Length: 225
Image (cartoon, rainbow, N blue to C red; front, side):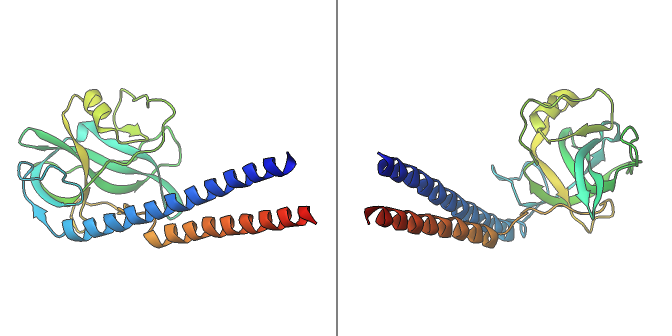
């Protein structure tokens, strides 16, 4: 019975290790596909919301419209060079259609109850950038949104924000071109970790599986002597 229990336990551990390795390989393949899509799509520029394809992610977009500074969003807990700050997002009005534009990073004041001084760009403005899916973190419960602005948020849930702000927002974010005159400090990157690291992690899981297999075989042979 002891040997049977050991074999069952070993098989379970090996299955887990192999599954983790395969998951890392799938993540690497996703990152490779994302990289290819970024290279291809970011070179194609669109100049109106109506002309966008059904899946507009990672395409370049140039629009003329107006910022709504009265409903500014601050994406919380954005670390840059060891300093805590926010990503500043404004609703952008393009002939009655709304989207969120991420202008970039701004440092947070020394005290939590203080709000940073936000830039304002009045009148009609030309903005260019990359269309990206809204950033999101794991939530144990829906985020409670404050009533006052600037609105600090942990996630960019465009559906919930549309209801809260009374605007019909696009389900994506326009990450502004770093060369834009209205851009702040740019810390956003579309791919946080490249595929090579995922392949390296997969190799580690597979090597652990090989090591566990070797130890299990050694123990089983030793038990026969």
